[in-house]
Length: 244
Image 1 (cartoon, helix red, strand yellow):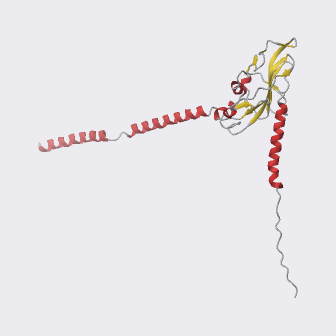
Image 2 (cartoon, one colour):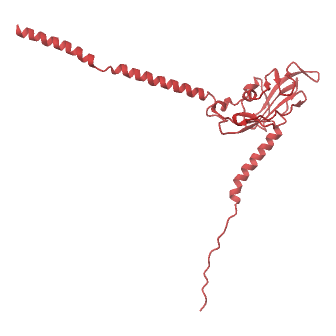
Image 3 (cartoon, one colour):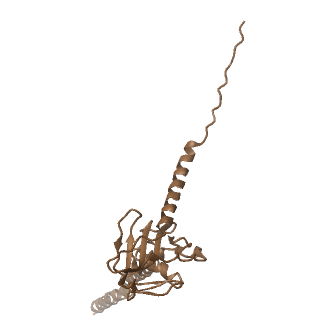
């Protein structure tokens, strides 16, 4: 009988012992899953912040912060271009501005204005009293221009024309002019013309040409000056030995 009761006690101890061991084990699977969830959450938050500060299509493409481009811009009304927009104040905080010479200076101040975010629409929004669309133009100091107006009694239309460079052929832009993406030494004309007629290059093209020449000459001078710097030749010492 003693042997039987002893065997039962051993069996009971073995059964309860296994249970106690499982209860004392650390749930590694649970903590591993929890750690993965936390890491993944932090990654999603960080990536979302990056996407907000670096909009798609902007990062990595010009113009970038630190670069400066110039665009000739003009608004046409049937027979002539309107006077240049007046210079803006406090340009140090603007990414797109004009100094009154008919040119738009493109100088991104943050990643939000780089690349595909450098558009004519952003310049227009930053200039009080200026509005451009395919059917209406508001220009400071001038009456509103509408596509329903006429030019010298002839039916007219509002056109938008873009030249990618000083030497390129212009192309009509059929979309919203606000979406025009800036390019260096680009030309943009917006205005009312008689149907069948075409917009000419903006008057400020001359200013862009002069600026381009000045920059080219400055670059050439900077390159040549070091090579043209005078050199100093130190005469070699000669030793004369007296005869006798």
